[in-house]
Amino acid sequence: MAGAITVCRKELADHLGSKRYIVLFALILVLSTLSAYQGAEYIKDNPQAGFIAVFSGARFGFSFTSLMVFFGPIIGLSLGFDAINKERTSGSLSMLLSQPIYRDSVINGKFLAGTAALSLLTVTTIGIMSGVAMSILGFGPTLDDASRIILFTLLTILYLAFWLALGLLYSTVTKKTSTSILMSVATWLFFSIVITIIAALVANLLVPITMPRDTSGGNIAKILRSPEFRELLRRRFSIQMNIQRVSPAYLYNEAGASILGISGGRLGFIGPGGGRPFKSLELIEGLTASWPQITAIAAGLVICFVSSYVLFLRLEIRPGG
Amino acid sequence: MPEPIIETYELTKYYGNVKAVDHLNLTVYEGEIFGFLGPNGAGKTTTLLMLMGLTVPTSGTATVGGYDIIKESREVRRIAGMLPEGAGYYEDLTARQNLDYIGQLNDIPESERKKRIDELLEAVGLTKWANTKVEKFSRGMKQRLGIAEVLIKKPKIAFFDEPTIGLDPQGTKEVRDLMTQLNKEHGLTIFLSSHLLYEVQQTCHRVGIIRGGRLVAADTIENLSKNIAEKGRMVIEFKLTEIRSDLIRELEAINGVTHIKRGEDNRLYVYMESDRSREVSETITKHGSIILLMKPKEHSLEEIFLKYYEREA
Image (cartoon, rainbow over all chains, first blue to last red):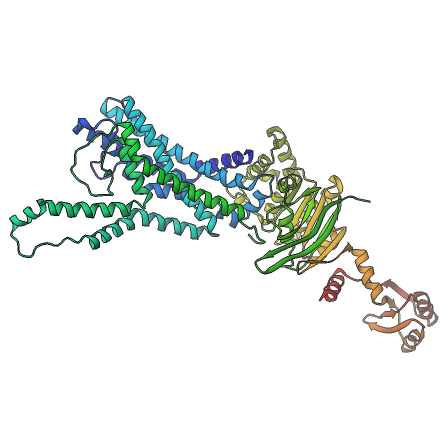
């Protein structure tokens, strides 16, 4: 364990000083502050929304949750994708493993350091957002709001740690950082863009919408209002949603919505935007509702980490790397 | 009699179907510089990686400093340091930070660490560059930093894998001198893996020759040379003021001399089955020629090396 702490300290110092981390941190901080400003404006217009709408209310299209849905994978993956293979290529890994430490200290330390860096990013960002919103609104979160914010922070850290673990896995299975960076970018694009396209495509194939040929304008409006048509839309939406649930980002979005007390899971730009009114869930209700998603993300994290752990312990250090 | 500090028993490693190390039995004694000699791909690096616990043997085992390399590999790494071939460093950290990290991993308390780092930087001549990022270092400087990283744990045994590869003559000499000095002054046992015959001859007390993962010979260079000489014939090299053809004829008539070879610059090589150097030199002086030089022709390490190789093949 002593070895893991030493590795963790060194890696954390590396992260905090790295341009990569600083740039991402700055980007998220700027965008989040803007979104807090938007959220606060939104609360002013919708007093029933409550303080936590700071994180979900999106007037111009992005809220903190949608930011995390989109940038989360890149933040997590970028802290993990070269953790092992970079040291393998540079030759510092064999130097490191020649020290009197157990091999798992290396991977544990690296994962801990990444998680610590991500936690720092999340806590700072959410803290600053709350501060900005409080100064605009003139009131702070209630106790209930505060507990939701804490839970939401933990959820965000878990979600980012999942991407970190996936990046760590990529860095363990590949020899070159150029390969793992490509895999990371591909993963990011797949889960943030490609999957929504696929979901829409599949939904369209399974539940095609057929319009009657010759109809006057009045008829169309009538059709659109008809219960059959609504049922059709509902089925399409449910197919899309279930496909998108493959994406941890979508799961995070849903879980976030439940924890923040907004039902329906339509916070960011994933899922159709609708005009349904806010329906506040009680804290416990929200937590219960988000449990399946939280479990899925946590399971994904464990699978990624354990795989990279096992692979790393079995890694053959061969002559020449 | 010195104590054995490294012993391998039938140490074997396969990479898939490729045999890298094949039932290797090897002993290295405390306080010696042991040269591990063999061409590229002979299994030198694999042996080192197994001894340090970076790779698990397919079968067989070994002890380093009394610790089993499989069950107690962490203890092995506590008392043994390795400078692997192509060792790398944290490029965006300074020399001091790199050393400090390795020191921390060895559980060296902070005050002691600081002291040792200063001493080591001095010893490897990097004091001036202590706070320079390693990315700015030349190859030779990096190699010296690597040696410092090996030494920070005050090891009993140091494994150096091709430590002078890619260094200029100056850097090569510095690294070799440093190894010799460490061995002499601190009694550090050094296991030097190399394919450079000259380097091994210069620095090592004993040599092990490895071929195709097997140890084909292990002894002092002197003994290895003698072994070959006994099997073959004795050769003495002479340099004379003049050589006449009747001298050669007369020398060939000496009992025990098999044949004579003339070399350039009035040199003679006399091949004998047994030592007839006295008769030979008497005959030469009788003919009025003066002996300017007379020495038994020693086998160069290159010859020894090739002989052992041929014999195995």
